[in-house]
Amino acid sequence: MNIKSLLLGSAAALAAVSGAQAADAIIAAEPEPMEYVRVCDAFGTGYFYIPGTETCLKIGGYVRVDFQGGDINGQDTFANPSAAGTGGGDSWKTRSRLNLRVSTASDTEYGALKTYAELLFQADDNQSETELDQAYIELGGILVGYTDTLFTAFTGDAGNTINDFYDVDYGDFNRTQIRYTYDAGNGFSFAFAVEDDSSGDDNEPNLAGDDNYMPDLVAALGYNGGAWQLRAVGGYDESAEEGAIKVRGDVTLGQVSLFAMAGWNTDGDFQNNYARWDGDWAVWLGGSYSLTEKATLNASVNFDDGDNVEAALNVAYQVVPGFSIIPEVNYRSDADEKLGPKAEDWGGVLRFQRNF
Image (tube, rainbow, N blue to C red; front, side, top):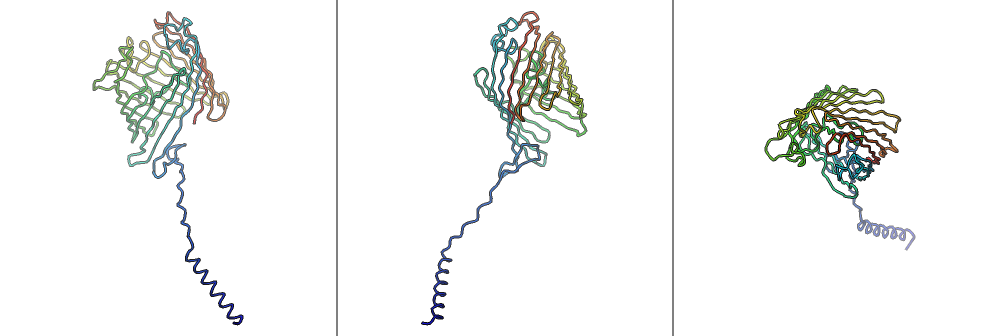
C-alpha cells in the first residue's frame, strides 16, 4: 500500500464518520418569542396593556396613617356625642388605611370603555373593616355603578383640608346610580343622574331611605375657563319631596387657588338627602397657597344658618415624591342642643401618606 492509497482511505473513513454524526445531530428548537408588558399611554400615565389583550390596566392607591386628637377629633367624641364640648371628648384616635384603586380602559366604536373600583382596608382604633368605596362602568358619557352622588362629585370637596366638614356637611356620598355627562368641548359641561335612595340614616327621620320605585334626581351644569371655574348642581330627594342647590366658583392666581361654595335647602326646617346642613343655607370657603416646591398651606372655613362654624388649617409637606406628612389644626363652634349651648372645640390631625 502506498502513501496515496493510505491517504485516500483515511479521508473516506473520516467522511463516513462525519456523515453518521450529522445524521444523529440534535437541532435545538428556536425559543418562543417573549411577550413583554407594553405601556399604554392612550388613557394617561400608569396604564399598561393586559398581556394578550387590547385592554389597559392601572393599579394605584395609597397607604395612610392618621393620629387625631382633641375634643372634636377624639375617640370619646364619637362614642359619646353628648360628652363633646365638656372635655369628655378630649382624647385621641388612630386610623390606618390601605386604599386600592383598579382602573381599566379600552377603545370601542362608542368611545372609551372604562371601569373603576376602589377598596378600603381600614383599622380605626385597632378595629379593622373592609369597604367597597366605588365600583362603576363608563361608556360614551354614561356611568353605571356605585360612586359619590353627582350632587357631591360635581362641585367637589370643601377644600384640601383633612377634616373639611363636621356639621356643615356639603352632601351625601356613595350611591348606586345611572349618570350621563356631556362635555361640549368649549368649557361647558352638563350632567344628570338617577340615584338609588334605598339606604338612609335611621337616626334622622328625614334621611331615612325607602324601598319604593322612585329614585332621587340630580342635575348639574358647569363652565371651565382655565384659571377659573363655575359649577352649579341641584338634587331632589323624592322621599322628603324636597331638595337642595349648590353653586361653586374657583379661581387660580399664580401660587394661590381659592374657592367659594354656597348651598340652599328648599325647606330649612328639615334636612334631606342633599341638604345635610342646619337651616336654609350654608357656605364653604377655602384656598391653598404654595409656600415652596414641597410645602402647601391649605385652609377652609364653613358656616350655616344653624350657627355652626368650622375651620381647618394645615401644611402638606412632601418629604420625597409620593410621601407626604400633613399636620392640621381644627376648630368647631357647634350650636347642636346635644352638645350644649354654643360649644367651642379644638382638635388636630397628623397624617402620613404614601401614594403609589
